[in-house]
Image (cartoon, rainbow, N blue to C red):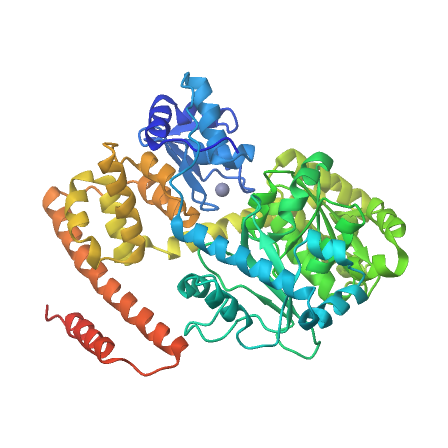
Amino acid sequence: MKGYISQEEIVRISEKADIVEIVSRYVNLKKSGKNYRGLCPFHSEKTPSFFVNPEKQIFHCFGCGTGGDIFKFLMKIENITFPEAVEKIGKEVGIEINFQKKKVSNKEKDEIIKANEFATKKYLELIFSSQGKIAFEYLYSRNFDENSIKNFSLGYAPYEKNFLIKKIEEEGLNKEIFIKAGLISDDGEKDIFRNRIMFPIMNWNGDIIGFGGRAIEDNIMPKYLNTKENLTFNKSRALYGLYWAKDSIKEKNYAIIVEGYFDVLKLFINNIKNVVAPMGTALTEGHLNILKRYTERILLVFDSDSAGINASIRNLENILKNNFEVKLCPLPTGFDPDKFIDEFGSEPFLKLLNNSQNFIDFMINVESKNFDIESPRGKSLFVKEISKLVSIIPDEIERNEYVKYLAEKTNVEKEIVKKYIDEVMDLEEKEIKYKSEKKDIKTNAEIYLLKILLNNQEYIKEVIENKEELTERIKKVIEVIEKLLKKNIKPSISNLISSIDDEQLTNLISNLSIEEEVPFTDEKKRRVFEDCLRRVKEMALREKLKKMKREIATRGKEYSEKELEEIQTILYQLKGGR
Ligand SMILES: [Zn+2]
């Protein structure tokens, strides 16, 4: 990591760069009204729904919803990080970047990471004490010795109700942050993880962002417990083993995906280091985006029981959609990599890896059992089922290669397969269009307010004044605008996008700003604006009410006097008496 770049420099670079020129290197763009239009490089489509707006310096795809500024485009298409994208464009426009040592860091995030580090240390210490004997013996029985326990910082959270809490109190640490880290209960009286083997989970940077805990006794539910979502931990982005695996993934240029913690560790111990596991979920787009920094090739290893097969097919869709090359390695039924290596050793495992299949061969294997391929009808359904997966591949040349391969393998004429895939893609595009029309944004005051705000900067001041009464989403945008203004930076759409670290929100912003605006008169616009503002305030009140109710429900206690009063005020305001 080179360091961080100041906001001012980012703005200077983006002002000098031309998004149309840069996108044109990857996408064939044609002028269309105020915008340029082309085939989206991020999803497969036949009619263009990808727009670039030179005036606002943003892009947006109405097919897959991806959007953003010039940096975001480069990050996605080149699989690079934000600083790398800024540096790259900076070089082109002749601005050299002054990397700063340390970003003004997010204090709470850092504190949660420190709390996790503290817990890791205590859980690890315990495993080598007499109280932790049960955990040590358990791990030993699964072929993990003292060295591997230490190397991977495995730990033991004992059955005791407040083991960690006592340690926190002994050292006089602040309980609040341990509650936020999801390590102790909200009332600060109970440990969350108990009688479990603890696996600290690190991000790419080596920070401990959360834990996975496996029950020591098989009858305890859930068998696996993860840290609940918080500032640092997000299950759909966390990959177990990534910190140790990333160099090897880069070097070998592929990532092995397995299911469990023990699988990752067992492979590691056997010197197969390019391996990671999602946290008990399917591979999400978040996981894939992170992996893309290191490779574009994935090898899925899984138990070939029906659950394993089905999970792999689900993963396949996402993997193909995100432009990865993929191979599959089914293990014999009833075996995961951990168990397989324990039983047969690592040599036979490597042999299996070397014999992994491409996804067409895998699907032919799977689907030939589901259809009667001897009958014409059965064969047609069989080929169509596999074709659907092929249609997901965004790159046309690559897709065509798979069409050829599938036709050859199933002995169907290539043109026929291709025709069917084209049909599937047309249907898919129609459906996307239908869905986006259905989600008519005019119906939502919050989104409409955001749209007016983004396209008419004269309303900014007024919205800032009302900030405290608005919804979380609008507040987030307003706070970024304020920050920019404080630094004397114009809160243009592209500056806004490069300052917001929330992909859903930046996609929404690019969407709203690239759409043609309804040509209202100033007077009409004013009325719409005020109406939206009022309705968003109502939304915010309801949002607040819901949040309070949720908090009280999870706390499991009665309302306090103060809370009751607050709820009554909100209800009164919602009725229109302000
Ligand atoms: Zn797209």
